[in-house]
Image: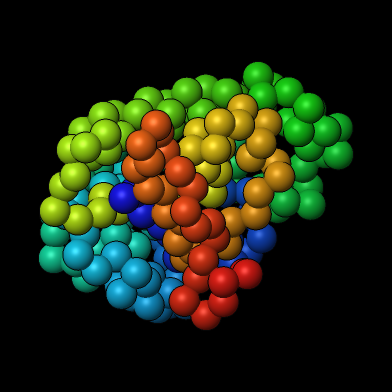
Length: 198
């Protein structure tokens, strides 16, 4: 099983910022959220994290006792010149282009298609080593961000990168992908310890 954890609330999330590669730390609430997720990953065999501090801090706070492996492919999408800006300050025409075209590149940033490609590569590698009959001793936990986890969910259900816009993902949420007979299966999406609909 692949357990995808979105990091806990960061200072950028609390301030309503579009948060990509800007390395905002967890808030106290975010750290508490991360600790609450510990039971959700009981029995994990590996913990993989994005290189960003908010993801690594969440991975450590899970309390698995396992070493945290860093995989650059799980980093948040690069929003370029919009990174760190208030969500409401992004022009409406930019949002429209992002929604219409997975190949839209914000100035200095990354396309959703590029992010989707790197995430699918990471997922397929995990499926090849942990799935298809190669059952490990426990689930693999990946601590990442909203865009990569949405991309992984789209991969699991066979959607293109544009499917990410139809998904909502809370901070400190848990998404589970199981290894089916013929490929990945999205088992649960966007669960939190305090609500299954957050």
